Length: 466
Image 1 (cartoon, rainbow, N blue to C red):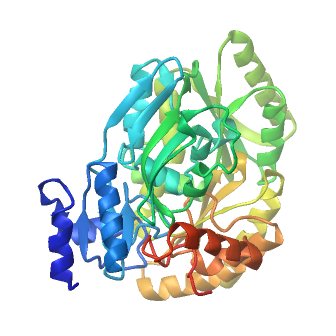
Image 2 (cartoon, rainbow, N blue to C red):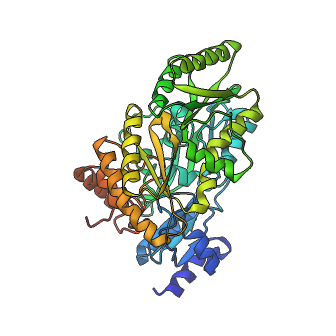
Image 3 (cartoon, helix red, strand yellow):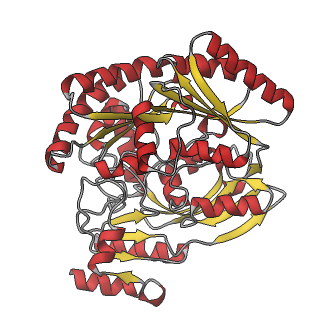
């Protein structure tokens, strides 16, 4: 079939012929937040039901049409980029909350439900959906699950996969599967949910998910501490974890905070300048917990780990302190940052970060390095800012060399080249730094089972041929 015939056929498979071909739509739906790849999709199709998704996949199999999933398009690994004439399957119109079970504390959602939409629904029903990140206002549930998104509260609540009671998927062969039937206990062989979670749409498309909810946290309180040294991040973390259940433990450098302050709308937490900062969040369920937190803070100061600090006295102040961390990506965006999302086990974080910082600074002293991340779960975000007088193409070429050095260190520390944004196109060439050759062959075998014609998000994570 030629492109015109493919587009005409797609229009018969969805309501109101919801197939977009306008250049502005192709650009908007054909990419995510990565900037290395120019979008070039053939068309955008917006189904409204699982059955319509199935019809699209079956058509694609019959006619060898490559499909790329598109959710909120907030990813940073080019997992949702259509750069080779693919058809983009966008889930914006599959955005309904279908069912809520108060007794089971579960809610069944279509894949296009926005994270914040789910969070608000849970709150309106006296419950809590704890997976949270800066893009919650635009990221979609299907995309979150396809990359197993983490965010700021993993230290307490875990990753997206920990909140999935059941899935409905359309496989690459065009079959509809209902996985786990929302059961808490179901030991009947392989749990296929967890193959589709984190698969980036390469095995099939998630169309519905039943998500677990939990109780709402009580009096969330935020503390921002100025650290004397990078290694003190672990000293402070271990001190607090022995006594208080943290809901978040975040980290950012002074350079990162400087960009946030220059960006406006946020004030410095205190007058003392520190090289690094830690943000702790916990439930202050009683005066005793607050007293314990203050005693731990004083202990950290006495040990020389903390130079200064502040603790929120209201929900508004807690939210304002969070802005110091959550506005970092927004504040550095004009500088065309090259982002790396990496992780190691928590105990190795200071040594790991110091090694990487030294290597990049030595080879590219003119590059400004911005560090922040979910340090409580070992996840660091390395951001290298483009010098203003350097062309984007030259900058990204130099960053490819940085990648080699960074991932050598990741491999030596038995870490991950992608902690929470997936592999996509950006990390595909570096998958072997985290996965063994034998393991990658097993991954290819799994894809062959679910997507024998290779139409599902082709070229992402790994190439089929080796």
